[in-house]
Amino acid sequence: AQSVTQLDSQVPVFEEAPVELRCNYSSSVSVYLFWYVQYPNQGLQLLLKYLSGSTLVKGINGFEAEFNKSQTSFHLRKPSVHISDTAEYFCAVSGGQTGANNLFFGTGTRLTVIP
Amino acid sequence: DTAVSQTPKYLVTQMGNDKSIKCEQNLGHDTMYWYKQDSKKFLKIMFSYNNKELIINETVPNRFSPKSPDKAHLNLHINSLELGDSAVYFCASSLLLTAYEQYFGPGTRLTVT
Image (cartoon, rainbow over all chains, first blue to last red; front, side):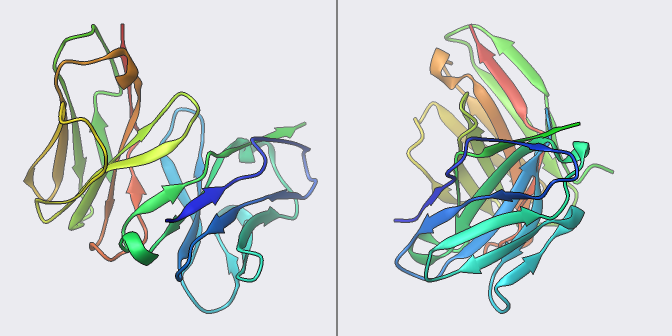
């Protein structure tokens, strides 16, 4: 079975500082990895995805993530955060044994950018 | 020109009632989903439909019944509501059954009292 672990439930960071949100997954087969962002009282928006190819994936709003197969990780990074980045971030995995279109989500990381 | 829309946005009701949540997508996608987000923000898939056919039905009580009148709509009907049904319900869609990118609606916050 697939699962996703987001190690930090809350991450406070000062404005213009870098940030890394951690995500680890477990799966015995190839997977596809995603980061979604949820702004307050809104639905989820896709930030970026890894399906194949280059392990460094660039997404919207200046975010990027690196797929590391040996460490089964897909950490999200941004070199300089803005107040508007305050939101809940979800890592998700799809593919493998249970079907290509199943998305399994982590428990989320609340990013709070401090002025 | 909202891509995935849900109505209502908020729904407050009493235990034992029956309620429906509607979802519509104007993206021309073939596949639609319902997710439940609990009070701890954990998201879990409930159902997926492809071309009006049920594909996935996770361990969801049979009080929950999805209905897809056409490819653009996937409604969620809930019978005999319980306190534990209180959550935010998200509808989503993807281009194909095998497409990995899903587009989410704004969510419906259901509160059962």
